[in-house]
Length: 413
Image 1 (cartoon, one colour):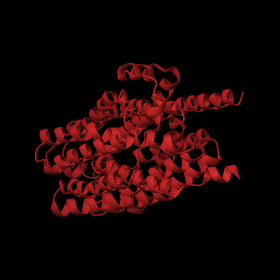
Image 2: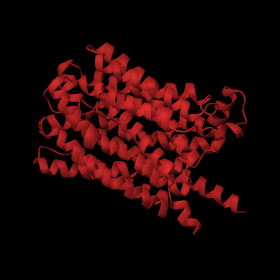
Image 3: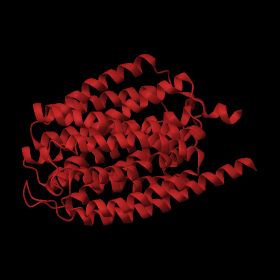
Image 4: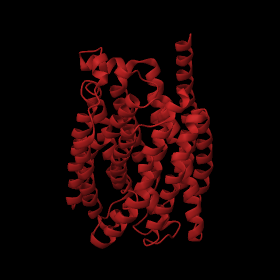
């Protein structure tokens, strides 16, 4: 009976899952839309791969810096208020992206968006860890990650359609409108999340930051998240350019490519989340990582093939990438104590973004394009680098899993 009760969500928890998934949807869409818009952007603004890499990494680096700046204060405020503050900043940054008309202005807009948007994920993770049992978190993370799939099923195809009709800036205006509605929903219906304030130990935010940063167990979690994120950031920005210039996918076919991959994510993520709550989370992560490694090698070495083969390969590739996320995030959320969760999640997200920023720059240096319409070169080299990073991430996530199991054994004793 106790197990059944633990598995059930209250009506308010269901509301929280939906609203946090919607915030993830908008933040992920804002970042993800850069990939399908990449080819259009590089052509319209005459950007080189290196410059586009800096635009993508500008978001990641600023998000990483913001995470460190807010980590010491993250456990000193109501998490609802923090979410509202950073979400409205994200909306403002996205509006700037929609109004830009030059490379320098776009780079500045992405930096502003990253300063606020990059922290939202860590706040959401802290809220989930505060309000959901560890036995529920695999499913919660699975549902929240559906925001990624939804951004591809709905957000990216719609964004590409209006971008083709009204210009590449228009998707950002669309995101601003929808995000404003989500922000108002949080203001009206979400209750404060402040139980962590009753057990806060450190009055000095900088001391709290240092203790959380220097905790030996937490450092294992930071390392695991950094390696996990580097592969995705390194490969993702070049998705549309590779599809169009190397695989000969047409701009009209591109929305369908992202939509089908997104639908597969929507189907797979809840299933993987539920599975990770029933089976060992690390085992699910390891299986998904090995699957992804195989698909990375195959996909990055593809040459022009019929469109249906590209569709199938993209689905298989996406299943591998997304199936790692729910078990990895659930394990990461179990590592910090409640009074450290806000700081831990902020630092973790910060390192994730910084690692992703480095990966984006490195990816831009590895991948080369002679002119606007030439195939991308050395994309397969990028794939082999990602394979190495993925193998390292398997080892680091294993260490996180082992630490959590040891802690449970100590509690039993």
